Amino acid sequence: MSFLTNSIENLKKEGVYRELPINEGPCDAEIVLNGKKVINLSSNNYLGFANHPRLKNAAIAAIKKYGVGAGAVRTIVGNMDIHEELDQVIAKFKKEEAALVFQSGFNVNAGVIQAITTDKDIIISDQLNHASIIDGVKLSKATRAVYRHSDMDELERILIESAGQYENTLIITDGVFSMDGDIAKLPEIVRLAKKYGALTYVDDAHGSGVLGERGRGTVDHFNLHGQVDFIVGTLSKAIGVVGGYVAGSKEMRDWLLHRGRPLLFSTAMMPAAAAGIIEAFNMLETSSEYTDKLWENARYFKEKLEKLGFDIGHSQTPITPVMIGNEAQTMEFSKALLYNGVYVSGIVFPTVPKNTGRIRCMVSALHTKKQLDKAIEIMEQTAKKLGIL
Ligand SMILES: *Cc1c(COP(=O)(O)O)cnc(C)c1O
Image 1 (tube, rainbow, N blue to C red):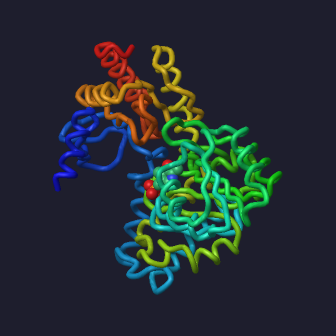
Image 2: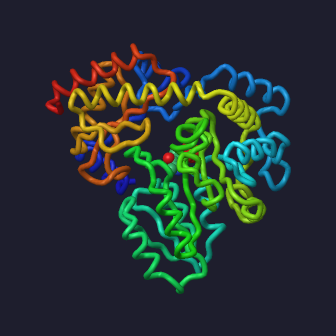
Image 3: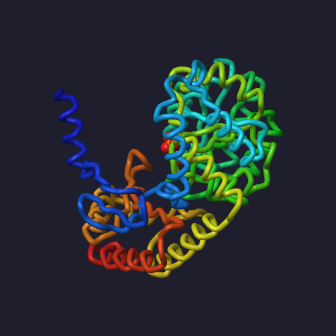
């Protein structure tokens, strides 16, 4: 194992080696991390659903009815009525013809991209797309091209250059870019796709439950219903549970039931998870209080950080990066914040490009103003001590 020991030694030399923090309770605004009570600014639990009593009760009731495991993959006997119901709930929420749930968002990208492309196709992908998209594209036999982040001129140039050479062209983008919080230029992507006859695939993991009416997502935010072919989302972030889905046409769902490999070869989602998720969508459909609170908190937090002189990048969503640059200093800042009572994870290469290290603050609907004020005060003091501010 010396090849691994050497690699680990290199991480330590670069100052990016880390141990996993341990959370001793539920994912809330304040958590007990490594035995210490801290303000949690690191989760994707945007709406506070991960520990919400209504979701918990729905999950408990489902455990009593269905047990804990689905018992098989969906294509054999793991397809319970609650999974079918969940597919329909999601299709309705996303205003699409159909939807299909997978065990995680990662699994959706790993399974769907390869199932809808062949070696006669080309995939054109944004440079900052999520790792699961990058891996999903690698599993496809299609030709690949990457355009600079949100650079529509380069996307169009690739579309022109590849015209006539492939059966299908698939443009893939994150809806909201997870490390910067900016929104994809979806209206322009859709316009170009129409002009050059391409298909569109949007992974809205950080947009669903956050953007659009009642959190319907980026497609709804831009009012592009019916104009994006594959709409991917996760059930693990704003929805607070676990799982992923793709929404779109009936034909798409039908095809994936036959060729979506994670669906064919990995056991169906825990039924209690499906029940909790259905309750989450019920709550979103009947009230905007959760999404409203999320945005109120995000605006409040960002305004205060900006006033203090922090560089918070160009986020358009509740994702709030605080740009540091140097990898080791980023990790040092994150460590010092934890010591002082705020948990914000440092994000460095290879998750983001070299020298663009940042701490990524994730505000949620759960945070009180008092908690946010306290976190901001600690961030200010710690940054001044480290020469960041
Ligand atoms: C988080 C994320 C995923 C993975 O979702 P999981 O449900 O956690 O597996 C996929 N795509 C994007 C863009 C993400 O941000």
